[in-house]
Each structure stands twice: as structure tokens, then as C-alpha cells.
Image (cartoon, rainbow, N blue to C red):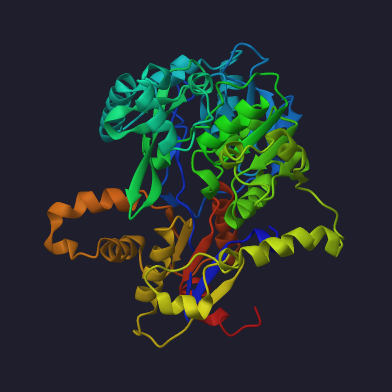
Length: 532
């Protein structure tokens, strides 16, 4: 992994702490009815399992060749005929970095080991394909997960059925809603095309998440405007929760033969781009915070991708990071600036969005460049000097004076004698950033994860929860939605395994902050004084 792709890392004297974004839960399934079951990952996991065996794209290709399985080398994925469909034109996509697969026809997904087990089962039974219906009948969910899904589904149906199309509102109400969200220039036709409704009880816009297979409703995002001290803030609420919400908004509008797409970070930006240019456009479920690898197969058909993620420096950095996942050779970027604002703002200001798209910059570049190519980047940093300094700590204003802010690619070491409070401080230091959306990975090699999570939950709630257990679920629900992940290592570990897990987390969850606590426990006392 290139150095400029690493998140920042915090080390404390004897303690290294890593922050990774929370992993998404994976899907469970089975390969057949009569044989031993193989459970496909179905939901996001809350912890990274350090013992997961990594797989390389070379190993994947070799396995496919050895099994006489035809494949096409795509941008982010390998394309193979799906073993879950009788139609061999239906492709299954295997992520080149992780080995995870997705069959878009059946929406079955799983790990590389799941795929190999499925192929073994196919060969053993001598059948032409594995029935997805048979596999679905063996899907296992806990009663709790099933109940939670039913409750979420009921809430989704309630909101969607009560929401109305904007063209069905009274003119005065429709104008008010459009003014609240600065979408006066977005037509009702565009809103209807993308399925956008209005939920009147909260005056929220409702963005649907459709199943791309049968267009069944899978979830919703509500966008609400909240006024505080004459400042309008926009708040997003998603169903199901953030860790289960993987809506590539606009996917049901795109054509199967489209070869160009514009990716935005907000749904309203996608509406603006499509209305002004007619270009295929989609928006990411978590904005600039993360590009979940599970979405990559849906973007394989495009030969050209333009990333237009916003109008500030964080959006620009996210554009460069995401282009590496998508294959840098096919990506172009819209550089933020006064003359190139976000799509919705550009539409409101009367800019020519076709002209802005044509001015996009290729994400790839030669190894040697001149100042002419750096000139606009230098100006952008001077123009956004506060953003260049990084994410500020809300709880530690004095720390902002010293470190200026949290920036990717930097290493911070905290030292101090035993018992001086290094772990306690770094826990709150990391939590502060995590609450601001900085994807965090913790590697606690001294304290077990349960004890660490208890400390962080107490810091998060600012309450002595052991004395107020009736409030535990309320605060635990909020804490669970933070982009916070934990490695499951404990005590001395092989450094290569730790680094491999970190790389996996950075790819999967776009981790920005890694914490290792602590260095001496991770490496063992005998290694601390060696040249390594």
C-alpha cells in the first residue's frame, strides 16, 4: 500500500492505537440443502477478525484457471459466470482485493471461501447451477435480527406510504419544501423519475432504496432541515441503520448499456447533474466518508467515471481515495473551487454543468510533474488553509493549538509512565474525532475490547451508566452507529498479520484513523530494543 493511502496513526509511549471504520456485516447463506452448510456472510461485523486469511488477485486468477472457470479481468472485480444462475450470461463479480463476491442476478454475496465451497459443491453434485431459492431457504438469521428487520420494514412502509409526491402538494407547500432544500430549480419530473417524495410530518425529503433485482423497497433516507441560531443544518436518517444502508441512489435509473457515470456524495447533487446534463449519475450512501466495496460490482459497466463529491478539501481528498478503488485509469475528478462548486449549488447559480464536467481532471498522472500541474493544488491548499490543518477536536481546544487538527498520513506518538492516563486520554481523543465522522480502527493489545468499549461508552454518554442501567440501551444504540471498529488481536502479535488487517480495514471501510495500544504489548518486550 502506498504511503499516501495510509490513515493517520496514533501511538502512545508503550501504546499504539489504530482507528478503523466499522466493518459492514456480511450475508449468510448455504450452498445446498442436503450437505454440510456453508453460511455466506450476510451482515456487517462489529469487529475485524485478525485471523482472516488474505487472498491475492494472483491466487484468485490461478484458482479460476485451475478449475477451467472462464473470467474477465474488470476494473475492480473479476467477472465469472454465476454458479447461482442457469443463465451463464449472468455474471458474478469477485473483488480483486478481498475476494468477496456478488451475484447481481440473485443478490447472493459472500467471502472467497464461500465461493470456493460453492464451486466444490457444484462439482460434487454434478449440477449445472446452485439454486438461489434452495440456498435462501437455508439462510439463517437470529430471532433478534429477524425481528429487527421486520420492525425496520414496517417503519419503511409506514413512511413511504405516508409520503407524497411533490407535484401532489399545494403550490405554496411545494415551494416551501423546495426553498428549504435549495432545489427550486429541480423539476417535479426529475424528482418523480428518481422516486423522491416528501414526508410532510417532518417536512423531510424521502429518497428510496430499491432492490435492483425486482425494485422492491429495501430502505429509505430522510433528509431534514433543522434551524439553529439562524443556521440551517441538514440531518440524514436512514432505514435500516447506517451499517446496513448500502443504497447507490440512482442505480435503478441507469441503463444496462450506459458507459459513463457521475458519482456524487449527495442525492440532491445527483438530481442536479442528471437534470442539467442528462448524464447517468449515482450518489454514495455515506457521502465522502466511505465507498463500500460491496457497491463496486454495480460500477463495473462504466468505462468512464467522474467523481464530483463536493466543494471543499475533504471532498477532493475523498475523490482521490475513491478513484483508487474504482481503477484510477477510468476516473476523472472535479476539483472544488468557487468556479466549480457542488452540482446543486452550480445549478442554483446558473453554471453550465456540461462545461464543468468537461473540465474534469484525469485521476491518473505521470510519475514526474511540473509546478504547472501542482499550481492549482497549491492554490487550493492556501485557499482552504483551515481545512488543510485537519479535523479539529471538539473536546480539546488546547490540542488544536498544538497539533492544528487530525490529518491523514501522519503518525502521533503519546508517551508517559505507567498509570499516567495515556489509554484514557487517547480513548477520548479518538472518540472526539469519531463523533465527527472520522472512520476509526482500534487495535487494543493490552485491554480487551469489552473493557475498552465500556470506557469509551462512558466517555461518549458522559454518564455513570453502571448507576443508570435503564439508559444503557439508549446510549448503546447511538454508540453503535459511530464509524468505530476494533481489531480482535490481544497481546504479542505477528506484525505482518497486524499490517494485513489494517490494509484490509482501510480498503473495506476507508479508515482515516488507526490507534495501537500499546506498542510493547503488540511486539513483545524482546523486540522493542531491536533495530526493527
